[in-house]
Amino acid sequence: MQLPHVTSFIGGLSIARGDDPMPVIGPAAGEPVAMLHQADAGEVGLAVASARDAWQNWRNVSVAARQTMLRRLADMIEANLDILAELETRTMGLPIRQTRMMADRAAGIYRFFAEFAGQHPEEMYRQERGYTTLVAREPVGVVGLISPWNAPLLLSSMKIAGALAFGNTCVLKPSEQTPLSLQRLMELITASDIPPGVVNMVNGTGPVTGKALIEHAGIDVISFTGGTATGRTVMAAAAQRLRPVATELGGKSANIVFADADFERALDGTLFAAFANNGEACLAGSRILIQRSIADRFLAAFIDRTKAIRVGDPMNPATEMGPVISAAHKARILAYLDQAQHSGCKVLTGGGDAGQAKGFYLDPIAVLAPSNRLPVCQDEIFGPFVTVTLFDTEDEAFAIANDSPFGLASYLWTGNLGTAMRGMRAIRAGTTWVNTPLLRDLRAGFGGFGDSGVGRESGRGSLQMFTQEKATIIGDGTGFIPRMGVSA
Image (cartoon, rainbow, N blue to C red):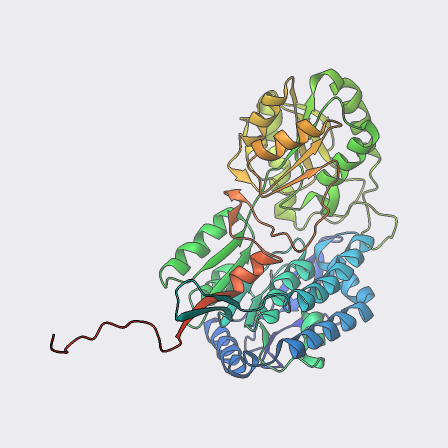
């Protein structure tokens, strides 16, 4: 069977200049599912030039027209949910029922930004007599978008929709590990009413294609989602040209269960926050903190449910967890398990290959950690791996939650509103969920503190990222102007 080839999309055309494509490995069987043509600096330059040319007209397209185009693209995504989900499952290993929900959410993102784009009129101030100040937000220009492998369609759509809604054009570089759903998205964009060159895509590795994109002088803003170490590299490169960067990076989110929580709801929510998306999520609640008075009961139930998670073929609608992204990533997760055992952690469950002879499968892992200072509690492992730490008091729980270089998200499970409100204020995290996991309103920005990044996405965060403020002061002819060079 001939494998599909993944190419760049530049100015509405499929372009592949490289003659030596690299394999895209499907994690379910560990075998190639596509061949990817890597874009070099020259190809990236073509994409940036295409975006710049398209921007000259796109910036002047009315908000109403952009809204119509975004809604039309949402319709097209909804008509292609099954194929988009299948392509994403094939390259990422996420169960098909989850990728289908993500594709549906991606369509919703375009609809959201279509509405949001029309809700920000110019502002007018009249503080000084004789003068009126108009404040408008204008598109920044050409934006470079770099998206990760763990939710490629959803997270790329968040960036693309926000950029387009506010009058920008873009060049997207998705992960070379999960390009197929984005290839299909580009085909839909090409067939839509969105003009050629408004959205361009280049494929390849970070050191080659990503580096060329972030260093290109024609990029006005960079939006990056990925690991913290790479985020530092992106910010350093952008600083050389004084270009703004928004980064949504790693996380190690505290998932705090108090004794007064609704037990079953907390159990359901803690499991989902920890292991949704195969545990490969920056906002995963992977540091579980349990109040000591309920620890035995809660842990027993948590372990039983974790062992019962259906790990297997991601194309099977009954599967709850698929393989992790790659052999190297599986080895990294198992290395942390080995490290945990040697540092005094008790392995509660997990670490096997889920009975699978091929592919990169793992039984979800939980370890009881004697200290939050251990590397398994401090480092982002990014997989189906949770640490469990016990606490006695509210203050102790909040202190442990903040004992982390990251500050992306946190979860609180409690029946006491006061505890929830104190936790919301005390914990340094961009998002705190109380008695619910992972629900998001796109009007609220998403991002983190500390090593979890700079800036926010969605809603006002995207407005700030993809527009810049311009002030115009207009005199009515009556205001005083000093007359220089006139005899006294």
